[in-house]
Amino acid sequence: MDEVTLSLPSALVAGLARDHLVTEPIVWRGADVVSLITLAADVTSAITAVVATRQSFAAIARSLVHHASTEAGTSAEVSISVAAPQGSYVLVERNDQAGLQRLTARVNAVLQDVAAEAEGTASRPDNGEATAV
Image (cartoon, rainbow, N blue to C red):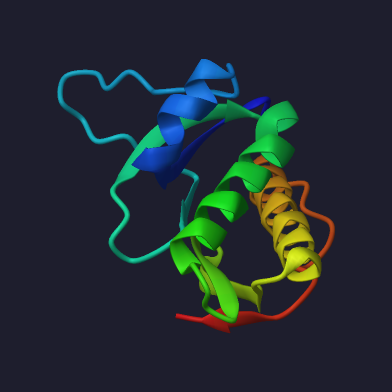
């Protein structure tokens, strides 16, 4: 599965599309787009479904973590909500350079794992702690 439908904060979509990292999916006959995974930086973010390739996952993870860190402001922690067929959880890290790097790696790993699971080839559990929702 080279292309995956994701739901991301709408505030990120224009920049990611401009950089050719995602495309918005075409919705046929008014049917809802079913995303493989939803990643949200906060509970108030508007979400937009996009199509992404595995090659763009790392850049998408960096953009999402940057967005989440900006939204968190001076808060001690940054969190990203994840909803996937395997369940929903929240990834939380400290809002400092090391924490943001760990969070980026964890988001990228989640994207890779969900895409692999959809193909039936997932081989490892999530690394790091996640809080169930």
